[in-house]
Length: 343
Image (cartoon, rainbow, N blue to C red; front, side, top):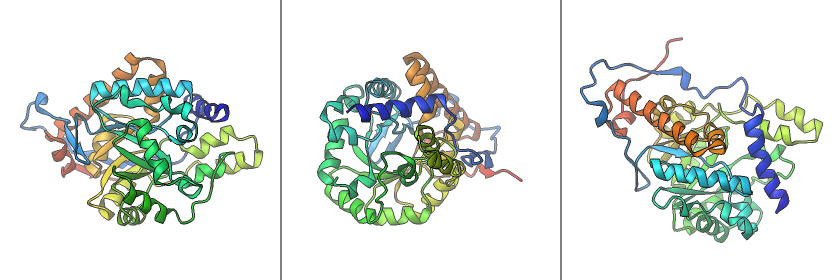
């Protein structure tokens, strides 16, 4: 347990203290702008953030992305995030529940349902573990531990290469993912961890029965950078640096995945920092906009700072909607007012 807890705590520390963002690559949101509507024909207090995700009504189209769990500090962060998500009506994901599936004593660090009784909660496991003995039973156990409504299987091939404890057996995963989708009674999704999912991959996942896709594109945290700081191997540290600009920008992923899998539920995440970023993600085709590392520091610091950030993001999103005359999330998704910037 000490090794697992130490790794989780080290990941948190590195994300807070080191430059772990991708270098030389952006989210792609800067390539788009909203055309202002000077006469929106609605009142600001009429703008509604309410929406539906996989049949669940939510107060906002916003998600606290899967981040952590598996250590005392991680459990405290998850509790604070869950409480804030419940207060403000955000959906929430937890970090990989693998540690708790393997070591029951870690389960409380992922058990966020007790803090968030009404919001959608997404449990999380590494898809690669399906090639190392995990199956439907372990996936269901992860859902039960988090008290979750759905499960997401994350794809992190490059991270596994550079992680000292990494598992790199990604062969044959699609068929195993399909088996889990058929076996579990809850929706199963797939997410990347910061390098993005392209349209072709999304189409194959949808055909395998995946209910939702979180693109987790490039432009935010780079997990090859995180693992670079963890590694004591100078060769691996140097090699990881070569991948600092790797990945598909988040905006590009959202457009591709929506076109390739029009009937899939879609989460746009990867480097989002503001409510305007969220508005662009939703206008490009996402059903939810996910925030990860941007929330970590305030979640560590205090309930008040975290609440202030969530409130600011909501205000920015609502103001962007007002600024283009979109009174609902549906109207935002269908707006013709998001355009590419002129070069």
